[in-house]
Amino acid sequence: MNFDGKDIELELVDERGTLENVGDILERRFRGQGVTVGATFKATWICPVRGDACEVTRFEVLFRVAKDGRTQLVRGQGDVGC
Image (cartoon, rainbow, N blue to C red; front, side, top):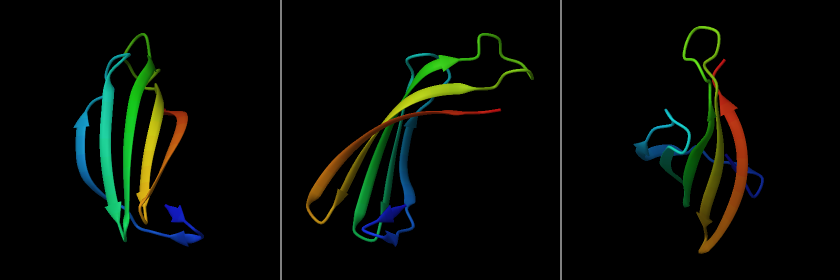
């Protein structure tokens, strides 16, 4: 991840939850060179029928980034699968 123009490698230090059903929450925490990032994902859409034709999960995400005594929240959305 890039902070203040510098790429910083983040390591996953904790993970809880899943995104198997709409409303499920997945939390991940990352750390690296004076930075901590918390990510909370919430499943907003899951393929109606599980199978080879659809494996997509859509989600909303809130990132909490802490560096040098400052914290910033960043909201986003995305999908994963094929």
